[in-house]
Length: 106
Image (cartoon, rainbow, N blue to C red):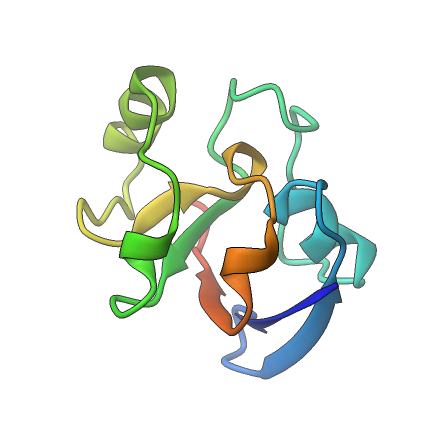
């Protein structure tokens, strides 16, 4: 397990123990964050698992695929430098101390 800091919509930050091999979305939902709707369940067909990755942590994540990019670009809260869909990030050992903030839904 790796430790990941998650900030919710109220600005409260909690550190979760994330299970390697699950998506970041699954880990956030498994830790009772109700702010992350994740309506499509991880199919990369909506933006309801949108998070902002801390600027210092962006480089440690795998590169974004085109379908994720297209969805995020249509989001009202899109930040080209920090936005990611948490369903598209598989947690691995390199993500210890990752910091993310749940994005507000448009």
